[in-house]
Length: 373
Image (spheres, rainbow, N blue to C red):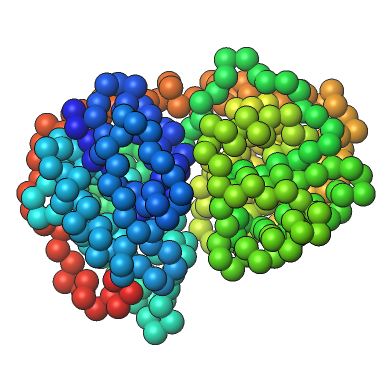
């Protein structure tokens, strides 16, 4: 099977796209064409992959990327049996003739994607997204990254949750001088709290490692914190390497701020558990339920960096208890969140869908009114 995978928004080494889905397809013997912003992200694609480079869509500056996407997708689907798109924006640039097409729907909406034109009322923008989703549901195959996304659609669609490559045996027990945060850094993700934690832990000889890209708005404060010696910020690191870097941390931090609705379980939490790292998290409902059921970490209040610091120090001062949390988290991840256990079903579903082609065009009447495109 020949599969074209496309994103203009996400990093080419995005864990869900590259290290789960594409890796599973390659392991199953399928051929991959990958449309992604390789040059803008300074990424060299792996040799088995046929790469098509596009500019990255960032903030309100998306016109060049969207213009390039149309031609890139047309090239990418030549001879393909299946097209998988990972961005809502690409629904506006689908080729008129294409193979069976899948939209991988994530919990992030247009607002979370990092742009919202000031002239466009939020309510109108949300209505536009709803119309796009409804038309996509009619014309495309959909997979959902999170159970809560079922509420956005009229028909049932398969859920392919984020999972991890979980080692059969737990790694070394948590250490005593380092905490870690894996994943994208933003205000909503609690970057202020993370910097506060780093500052408060420094006198105790505990460093914070930040592994992930960051929104433009928070990059200056992260650079300042690094120059002050408060933390080490490594930027984006491919998921498989990021997890190795995280091993041995006292705790893995997940400190997003309160959000409306039912936010999904952050993938970083599963990543920490897969490496036997205790979790320190704010009380998102999905994470709280997981922590309370498994005993894999500690829940702290939203926006309370001091509480997160106390949780980290408690883990450092109780190495046996921390190790037990790590073991429990690893066992839960291995039993219920191990990607190799789920990959076969994912591949089988795509192979079945590839037998049916779609030639109708996804037409959005209000497309030209969306000025940022």
